[in-house]
Structure formats: structure tokens, C-alpha cells
Length: 94
Image 1 (cartoon, rainbow, N blue to C red):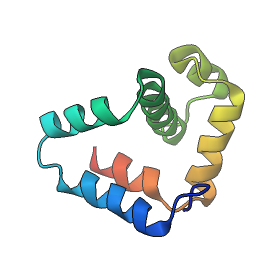
Image 2: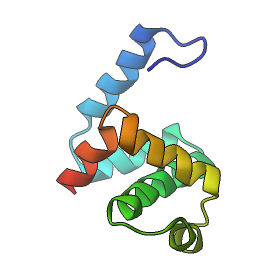
Image 3: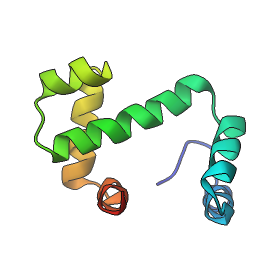
């Protein structure tokens, strides 16, 4: 996983920062400072889409409940099927 113009060390620094958070309150405060409302809503939407896909929901049901477009749903579906199991780790733990 590499973003454009972002070094692996800087990405690791971000992940280290996330792992340093100890409570939900700290997590909420950090992400509130880090992300725009739109970015945070996108993260939430993708997680809900992933959960619904794993539960067998149709694309239409997902679009109605989450307002996600078919491209987003397909992208999340691809990550569930061929990604690094990140969604699965989190969904299994929730």
C-alpha cells in the first residue's frame, strides 16, 4: 500500500500513530482532527458496505441503505474478494 508521493516511512508513522490510540474517545478525537467530514463519512460508508456485502445484501439494498454508488460497492467487493483481508480482520472483531 503506497500513496502517491508518500514514503513508506511516513505511512508507517501514520499507522504507528493510529496504534498508539488507547480509547474510542482518543480515536474519535484523532480522526476528527485528521479527516474532513467527507473523508470520515467515506470510511464509514465503505465499512458498512463491506459488512452488508458479507451479510449477502444486494447492490440495490446497499445503495438504498448507504447511498453508496455501484462503483464504490464494486471496489469494496473487490477488496473483500482479492484484497489484504483488512475488512475481514475488522469485521470479524466487531
